[in-house]
Image 1 (cartoon, one colour):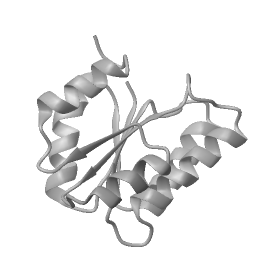
Image 2 (cartoon, one colour):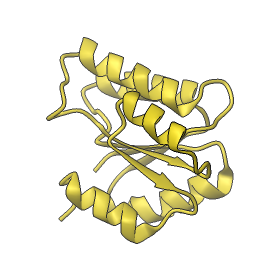
Image 3 (cartoon, rainbow, N blue to C red):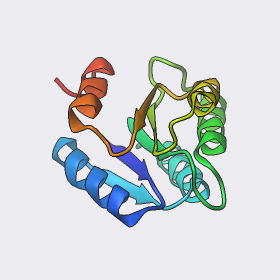
Image 4 (cartoon, rainbow, N blue to C red):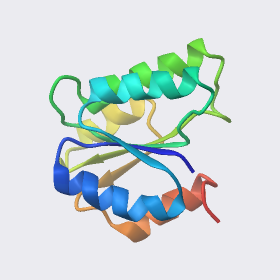
Length: 131
């Protein structure tokens, strides 16, 4: 499983990378702008990300806008839901509006911080990214 971790907080990036690296290759981005560029490059080279863990609140470009741009890149490349990246939004913000906005931005799941690894693992299984 190839994963892109998008998180502006070092501790959050480190935790997710340490946990997810057991399932495959992990790359990191510190904001939405870097994430979109990394996703574009991976898609163009034929090595797309299967999972993206995206923080909602970040500098330069927030997670909701980055998710929308990722989905636009997939659409332009002819990648649709059965082959698209699974996107899990992560945030410390506990507001219903953010959850609704994130799903409108076409994410697949939403996890509150601190990350519960059992919940994250269950999402990976539900997405059929791990056994």
